[in-house]
Image (cartoon, rainbow, N blue to C red; front, side):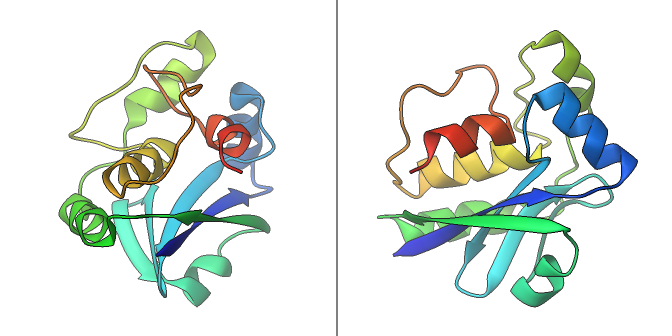
Length: 142
């Protein structure tokens, strides 16, 4: 089954600072399964919402379809993450390019990356092992 990875851009100060530190044109990533979008957001941690509500939140979105061979495990994983906090440590680690993996809290791109892994998507090996940014996913996904 195809899932959709959305790369997002906002023009507010936070979005601009994130893109600067990430050296990316995207400051957010989310994953859509059917009509539901899952994402890790600074104001609510891991949430799910309808695609129309999601789309209205961003100034620009580019979407990439990805084949997931294990949709039920992917959905189960994402549903288990609902309510987990946003990983603020990751934000503070950006300028230092350090590792920030913490499975008790999620940054948007790491949530999407892990969901794709659980879902059996073909993800290139060239992604960093200690962190995954929106730019990393943008470069890695076809």
